[in-house]
Image (cartoon, rainbow, N blue to C red; front, side, top):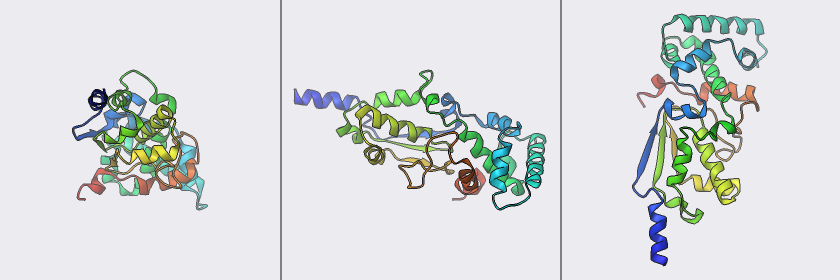
Length: 227
């Protein structure tokens, strides 16, 4: 019986070392935009107030930053570029505004409820493949490389571990070390269990401070390609 139980556990885990490589489509089922959709959201007149607040934290002229934002949006709309990354490669003067807008738009999708939709929810399917007791969960041989800035995967997995096994955030964070997730071009912010001053998975909390950090947290493909 013990041998049978051990065999059953093995058949429900990922034993072969499996690396997931994630592009923009990986986050699409959870509301996040693809590259062209992100372009459309950036050009729309949304989140201007949040961006201007972050840009003007040093007490500079708000009217000036409002004007800069309008100039940026007009230039991007007329550039013929689908990708904000490609546009910013040739327009470094807009780098700060561009990265803040990327962050603000992606943060607006940080809603827990969007991760619970059953349609095309590959996060839930992944959990089914990792279906073992907590004590053997770490034996799953799984890791991730993502081209995305969003933090939906690590948030989903950490919360699933907490709620499924009735564990504390600390215990869940410790288990998450067994599932390395590498963001090639940075991420919006670390989660609270990743860093002491990390930001909660939320579309509204402490926005100005974190938008100011966006130019440092977010790397463009051209920035990192040589590395």
